[in-house]
Length: 138
Image 1 (cartoon, rainbow, N blue to C red):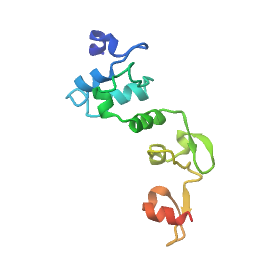
Image 2: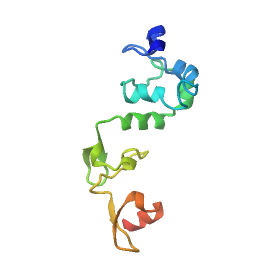
Image 3: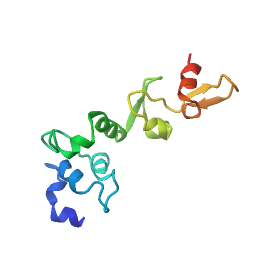
Image 4: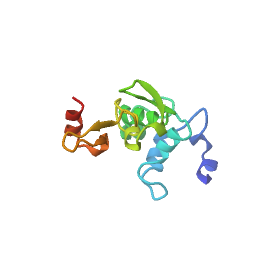
């Protein structure tokens, strides 16, 4: 809070300098190597926009590519779409690793179960190796 009092322009509804944050705060002893910019985006609703919150050639753009920004924004949503049942569901309806999965494919708890070919038990995606999960869905 002392830093924000000294530099109120860092976080405001009109302006946020993510390049400055990446250059001066991220990776320092006062903040772990990933965190402050992501916290501003995920918890406080800062939406990264080139020319508004950071420059195209700045430190923030260097560190976060479009996919990383999309993943951070997706993680902050109240719901996500299960790609099997095509239903928007809340975070509690997904396993934590499914909610955090990169990309567009994710399965809710009800759809995230397949029978194991070896033992016949019903298991979630995290209990399978990736090739084994793909085979069991055929």
